[in-house]
Image (cartoon, rainbow, N blue to C red; front, side):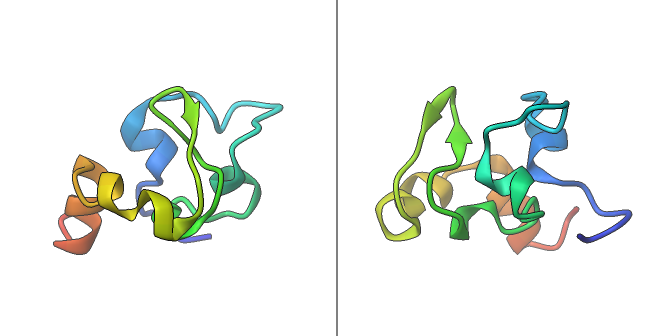
Length: 71
């Protein structure tokens, strides 16, 4: 995990990091690259594969900030 860097669940404030999370981004410690993880819980709904969801991810504020190295 990228210690000290903000994770997607922290940025989004979804609470998925709290016990019993069903989000694969938390389970796989992929909070900095959540767009690469299939089945993430974005917008309250399970998303598809990375290829299916990348269009939506490119519009995500977290994705934009990570890619711009702002966070």
